[in-house]
Length: 440
Image 1 (cartoon, one colour):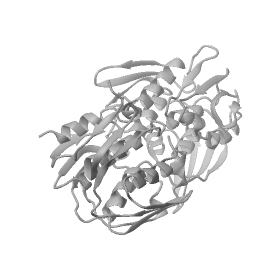
Image 2 (image 1 turned 90 degrees about the horizontal axis):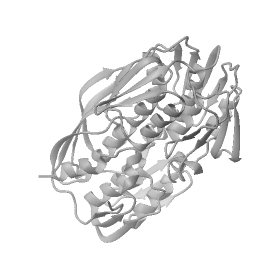
Image 3 (image 1 turned 180 degrees about the vertical axis):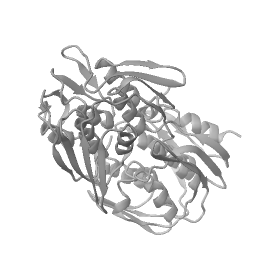
C-alpha cells in the first residue's frame, strides 16, 4: 500500500455523525495502572494504535498477561511491583513519549537493568525531566548519550517518597512521579504547574491515597503508597486531540455540520474548544455526563464564514498543547494577526512542531513571524491554495500529517503528503473517518 497521500480537491458539503478512537492518554494510563492491580481489568474502546500496542507489549515483557479480543482488552495484574521478567530485557517505547516517560515510574524498584529504546523521533527527545526526579527515589540511569534514548534503568530495593517541584507543566513528568509514588514508602509530595489531570482522576477512582490542593498556578499533590490496587473496568471515551482535527475540518469546510459522539472533555484538555470558539468557531457541547471522574460530551460543530484572530492567553497553552498545529490553520483563515506565545514546548514533541507549523503555513502562502517561543500568523480570510505542496521528512509526526490533510481538504491546492502510516501512532482510523464524512 502506498505511503503517499494525494489530495486534489476540497471535501464536499457534509452533515454527519462520527465517533473517534479512544483517548490515547487514558488508554496508556489504563494499561500501566492495570498492570499494578490485583486480578483482571478490562477496557472497552481501548485505542489500538502503535503507542498503546507498545504499552501492552511493554507490560507483557515485564511478565503481565494480556488478552486482546475484538471489542475489549483484558490485563491480569500481579499487584504493585508485581513484574516478573528475565535478565537483559529491552522495552521499546516506539514513538510514545507518554509510555517512555510513565513506565519509568513503575520501574524504580527493578532489581535488574532494563533497557529502554524508542524510534528516531523519540530518541531525540529529552528525558531529564523524568530521570532527574526518579533518581531521587534511588533509581540509577545509564546513558549512552546524556538524557536521550537508549538508556538503562536500575531500581532500588528501598524507595522512599520524595518532594518535587514540577515547573514545566508536563503531565508526563508529573504522572511518572505519581506512578513511582505507588512503589515508594511514605508520602510523595508534588508541586506541579497546571497540566492534564487524567492520572489524578484515575488515582482517585482506584482509591489510591491521594490528596490534591489547587491554587491558581499550581496543584499540590500528596500520594501515600497503597497496600494494593483492585482491578477495574473502563470504557475509554473518545480522544479530544483526535476530535480537534474534525472540529477544524468542519469549521473551515463549506456549509457543513458534524456531531462527534462521546468525547472526553476533561477541562485540562479543552483549550482547543475555548480557543476555537474565541476565534468564531461554532461549537456546542451536548449530552454532558461524568464517567469515572472524567467529563464526557457530544460535540456539535458547524461551518463558520467569519473567523477572527486571537491573542492566545498563555494560560490556555497546557490544555491545547497537542492541538496547536490544527489551530494554526484556523488562524491562517482568520481576519487579523493571531499571536501564540510561550509555546516552546511544541518543539519538544514528536517533531519540532512549532517550526514545522510555521514552515507549512509559509508553504501555503501565509506569512508568519517565528521565535523560539512564539508565532504570529497573518490571517487571510480569502485564503485559497492553487499550487502543489509536498510534505515530507517531518519525522513521521502523526499530527503534522493530519494537519496537512485537513488543510488540503478545506483550503484547496494539490497536496502530496508522505508517510501516511504515521497516523498509526495515535489515530489509525483517521483516513477511514475522513472517507466516511466525504461519502454522499
